[in-house]
Length: 439
Ligand SMILES: Nc1nc2c(ncn2[C@@H]2O[C@H](COP(=O)(O)OP(=O)(O)OP(=O)(O)O)[C@@H](O)[C@H]2O)c(=O)[nH]1
Image 1 (spheres, rainbow, N blue to C red):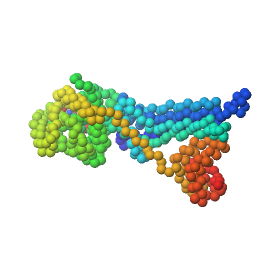
Image 2: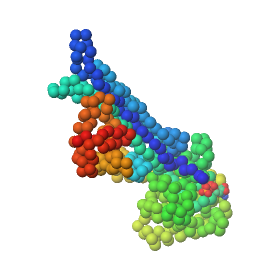
Image 3: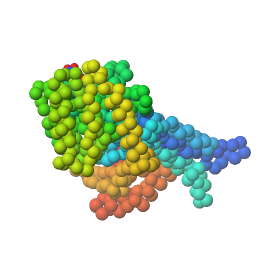
Image 4: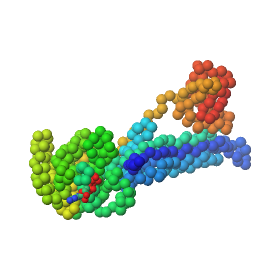
């Protein structure tokens, strides 16, 4: 079974808030001092932050659980608990984060230092100082900390290469990439070069360097999900320039122009806009004698094809090269850098604010609570809201427990129980806690 390193499923749990405290002042001359229990501290959140140095989701293969620390509990003498530190997890640029269960998009992390809270730490519970009122100046009431958010996330890496190599298998993409990119030992170490888009940085003499990716696996039917191709097509989406590599040697008697059309069909079936992406046709293997003939034929067909089908579009330029003899490589790379720069400018003008971060939040859960009756007659209360309220109730103190009972009543629980026929003394359960129903 092959593994895709550009996909990861992980579990995150933010820290619970610290519990609020019940305490009273005890001073020498004020034996019956006022309430003095401090609030709990904020639980740590889990934050994803883009780290430009990362290129894959490899790290998540071994590390799939992330837990932030709980806030400190409130203390006597009105002291607040300390908030826990957030847990910052580095992700590569291009990471798309979804809620695994609902598939809802949480964030699209693109630019360096983009960050998003993927699980929010719980609020600290309030200490008894906060519950003092004129009528109840010394309450034995405190709240426990709010639970931290917990969720399973799906991470997907959309590769952000500036330029992508597409083309049929064996046209020479890997060879070209390995030659034009300064050898990248880090990439070589991964041992999955055949299934994961292979990346390298191209340093040009006259222009800025850029990231070039080999996007292997394009085959007929890929766009409709057949084979591995679809996985790779996702990566082409964000490349600014496409280098369409053609085997001009006529390998296995294939017609280079037919190959070109097929790959284009694949790209367009996936996303029609790819047709308008700046493209250079890279005529490879020009060291093979027949290539001179083929390339002439190819460029004639190409010109005719555009005249017939896309009369308003510029015909892509053809760059003859040989990955073997290295003929034409410098020129091709300089031209690629120019096109990338132009495309970047165009994109900037289109969307001046580059903050592409999209953040959606899950809508809060529907009902306040659900009430069911089990076979043995026990009433069971469930639902996110009521369970959270229960976790935050401090049941050690009668007064706190009474406050919880009042909260349940205000929520409509008593009424719902009565409507379902609950009698005095019937057992009601929330999570693992049971109590008797009192009218
Ligand atoms: N004559 C000649 N052969 C080349 C040239 N470039 C690559 N080849 C050969 O073509 C074959 C395929 O090259 P690859 O670089 O593996 O092709 P690819 O497009 O990456 O193929 P996949 O990994 O299958 O997608 C190899 O045997 C190369 O040695 C070239 O410029 N001239």
